[in-house]
Length: 389
Ligand SMILES: Cc1cc2nc3c(=O)[nH]c(=O)nc-3n(C[C@H](O)[C@H](O)[C@H](O)COP(=O)(O)O)c2cc1C
Image 1 (cartoon, helix red, strand yellow):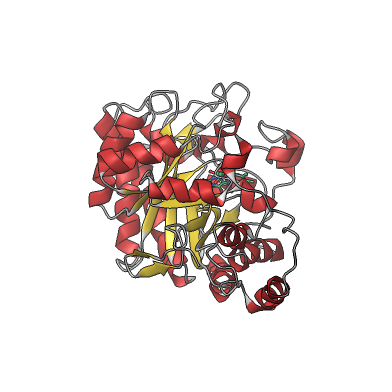
Image 2 (cartoon, helix red, strand yellow):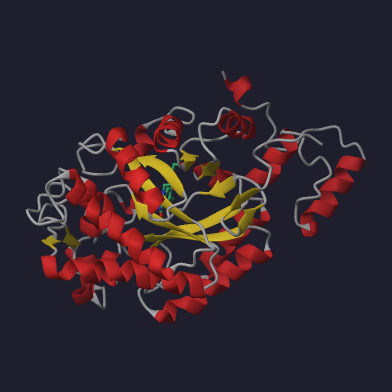
């Protein structure tokens, strides 16, 4: 049995992760009036059973008006605690730590599900929304995401403390639901990122203008969350380290240094999403295209980072950790392709030849098959990134 960094445990405050493999938050667009469905349970559960150390539930909205589209998960009311707790329990029962991402879509709200095409929801679709009056699209400034997109309303200065408080209250609910860790969504052109951006934020009060002012909303969200989220539990924050619209690595290094002092433990390093003219992160088609940003933030801000984006193979993930470019790796779409990605990587890296780390419901049978000397390779088998070059 080989030793790897990928499969060595990691301590984050009082939470011990069994390995450094994280399932990236992925919207399922499948909630009903903000409530999770059986789909969410199965989706999260299969990644946990597949061996991930931490499963982060998709961006769950801290306010009704922060929903992006139809089917967003909600955490803006206590009524969501028990249904979310069911998911957290199921993840933990299947061997992983349970995380949840908190989000607010800001000006990108009222849009279509991705498979219905990019763009705002039609008038007919909106007419079907029962609580449409509560879906008030807000942003730092009254500037739409792009031409033809929903026109947001600029938050009044007097409304900002309430908008920040919503994050703290949501964190308290996530704690009560039993989540082990929480990630703040500060990336992809959503509300927090909009405040950070010199393009989306044209405010003239103390939340706009200078870099310090633009960072204020993000920092106060962290303060509000840390006031409600136990000190024993780790806190992640996802940022667009390069948005190609004026908010880049140097700015994020400065922000990350401040966030560290406010109790953020890990920066999850993503990119893009600020406006409709800039194609989002999915256009980049190279292995580990965002790893460079995790590396830079880790070195220059002296904070733990998580790398994400086309991390496909176990040996690739191991190299990222060995070369100290990041402390954790998050895998998104490849977990959709193979929910047992972590178990598969443990096999390919020689970490668990006896399937001892797999749930006994399938580990028992796979170990038996291996012991009997089955000479073929598993269906997912290949030699890794080296064989792909
Ligand atoms: C279906 C889907 C839904 C996503 N939803 C979220 C989300 O809720 N929050 C978020 O920060 N990123 C979201 N992302 C981005 C992923 O977390 C991840 O950063 C991105 O897919 C790149 O990693 P990958 O190449 O491993 O998929 C989503 C991606 C996909 C494919």
